Length: 343
Image 1 (cartoon, rainbow, N blue to C red):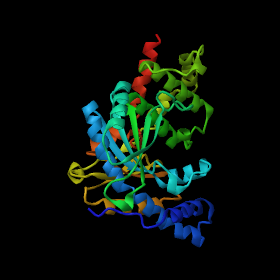
Image 2: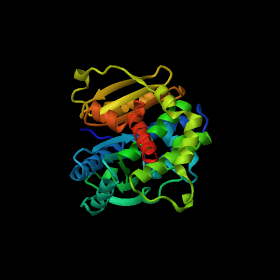
Image 3: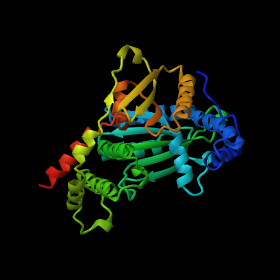
Image 4: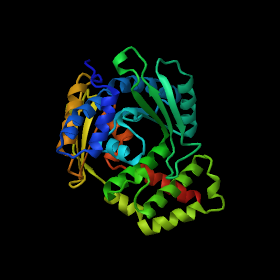
């Protein structure tokens, strides 16, 4: 397979990132920055594949029912992060390439976390963040491990790949946040938007943590978090709202998708439809080229959301990326468990 390699220096990549968010759209600086950006993002595909294999092997040893997928970060998400995070630069961004493992429960996540740190690999563990022991203020819980590629392909040396480890409950929460954010046009994932939605997800996360017997931050001691969740729910009527977000997925011809390794998804929020195209394992270059072309084509259309992901099958894809299919069934199920536990 012909893997895409970085064609520009890190200084050129850094400058391109600055021009993409600061230069005028019709300026030569912006025009010159576009191919640098897409080459930089696409060049992460090879180290991402290496880390996918590493993560999958270890995840299956812990939980045979676990599923592992990969994705290259969407361009608007990269741009938003460059604007949002002071001091962030394109050449130093650690999550352009990401692999995710979803396991049955928190104990499995902890075991995988420990196993990965002990596993022998040429890749360098650069950073780790335990958002289960120390969750974000939003309620986000997961474990993140950032590796730097250090294998046989020297031109890819130093490229980052982020591994995310989640339990099913944690995954359902993150999925619901992204679905609601997509349909309400709010960056809830970045902790911005309507306070009622932010509070709802924060208290839902706290109640989910109780279900999984995870520690609760001391700042919530003496607060009836279930009552707070109920108060938000009465205002939002979340079940009714989430059911309204259900996307009608176009019929996928199984014969066309058979043998596909990569999937290009286009979520059309205006028509409530997902378009999906599969590519086999030898078509990564074509898949990334189509991804880049579609992102540019729909860059000004806020009703379109484009993403290129990898998974073993359409079924596995839908399990791992339900936010692109607006499937909040599992989140709703866990909310029902919270209500039952507080009866």
